[in-house]
Image (cartoon, rainbow, N blue to C red; front, side, top):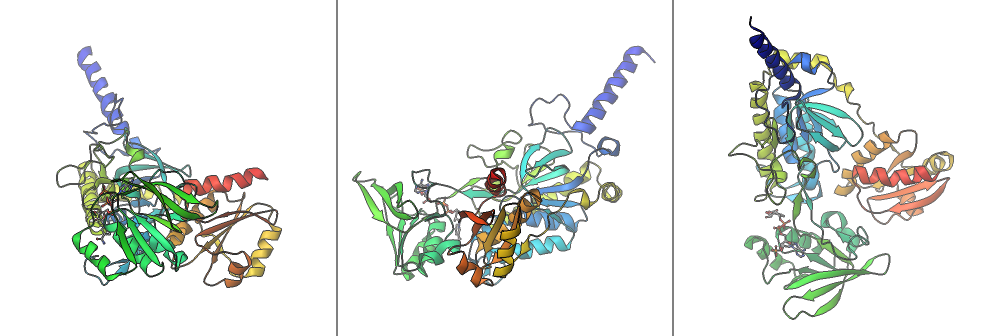
Length: 486
Ligand code: NDP
């Protein structure tokens, strides 16, 4: 054999091995196309745990992906994210979920989750911090410091409610400013409140509020509402709801503890006036939660991940997007669920193309088992006042008490987050959950008038009270400050 040919073969072997190992040798950009991939056990021997499908997000899109992945006997892991279940858990009754009577958003999520789990999908109560899509298997890094490998990845991270970005909004968040009427409407009994926005969500929020609040004014910045005509017509049935047009919120005003009013600019006369209100409910649309993928995959100018043709395939081979993170048009739970199914089917086709089969599935299963990804245990529930007082008095570390109620979707969203953060701080803080509907004496003793509510005790004394939902990262930072104080 001539030396040149030999060198050529060596170079060829090195390149092929590197491709098997990293997917895209020489790629300086993460936007690599990952052509020529093949599953190679030598290359992934040291990588643990490897999942055939990793789904980021646990709303309707993530959960239907999980159902289809798991039902195809493929090792499927769902990383639930900061707010497990996503936006649907904050919705009241959903009347247009195909084939069912009206269901609460969280009931839909619960059903989808149980169905996916029954076929073997696994769930990780954690959030993704970073993904390296330039390598394959993709490397997924979580906020709790875990690293997972994914042969295919489905991004189903949804979208988050937009904020106004005006003065007072942050200061009074959870103290009169909120984006969830279903969670907070009961706290505004017989009070005047405003809803900002002119879309379908604004109509929904106003209707939810109408059962509790005295007067609800929808503030619309244009001279018309964007909401569907049928939705606008629904408003006629609620005499305590009115609509004010051509007004732009300028500033949210409060007394230091609670919202007392909102400053509005009349866009026609340019006059600024203050409208007294006890609550400001935001319904001004959403932004896609695609930030962690911004250097990896092609997006449109608004940050929505671009998918190709009728598939859920993105610009990165093996990476798929489903639901609101790629849908700026429909934004419906049913559409997201359909996207999730398509994404899983696309992922399965991709896996087949790269050599996935029953033998590979069995070898992967043997290679690493689920215990490779440590799961969080549920935090202790206490519903007896004396037991809680004992815990607070005897603890040598900060005690974090989470008050929740079954009727409060944000509270239910917080529960797995509490489990995850409690696991993270294991010996550094004690976490306790209190069901406010069961433990009325605890509620009275500690003046818990709103849920979700977190109380923190240090050296037996109450040192902090927090009345809004927190994501995993935020809660972690919140708890850390009390640990550092000791
Ligand atoms: P939309 O984007 O449809 O509407 C947002 C509204 O907020 C618009 O009226 C917009 O005004 C206004 N807005 C945006 N920014 C500001 C600001 N800074 N200050 C004041 N107003 C602002 O969002 P929705 O959440 O209402 O709906 C999202 C999607 O979900 C839609 O497709 C909707 O149909 C769907 N949906 C369906 C429901 C149902 O069928 N039951 C219920 C809820 C939502 P402008 O028009 O001037 O841009």
